[in-house]
Length: 152
Image 1 (cartoon, helix red, strand yellow):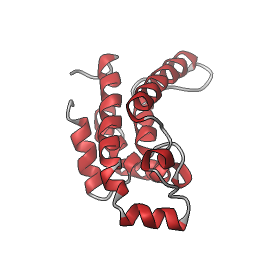
Image 2 (image 1 turned 60 degrees about the horizontal axis):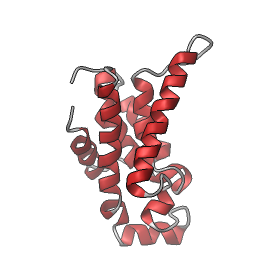
Image 3 (image 1 turned 90 degrees about the vertical axis):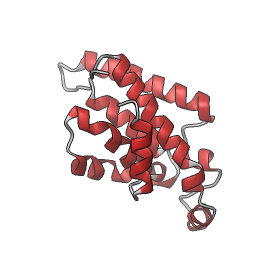
Image 4 (image 1 turned 180 degrees about the vertical axis):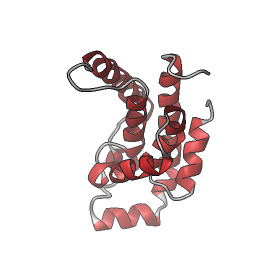
């Protein structure tokens, strides 16, 4: 699924938020139902609470958990490995874009009515976020594929 970024951008253009778009582009091979993925990722769009951690990054991290994540008392190794992969996503995304925080990436605070209105008026969710959605999906897929969780 080397086209994960294009698939994610297609979902984003179709009206899904950034987190939903990235998770939707990656959830199929893991067996996560698309409708469930959309509901799960809803609150992470536009950065949690409008402006926090980039929703595209959150979607990528969710996808990493689908491939090799785990929990409970017997899930220590799976959690540790997923935390390490999450750090790789954070580091690579930060290196490329200078932040993982939505308000920093789009250059205003979408948690305020004025900031949200300006972001919409200036189409920042399109001009700024489309490349971020593409990149987050690609970064996650590269990690998922390189770890052998799916056949290339």
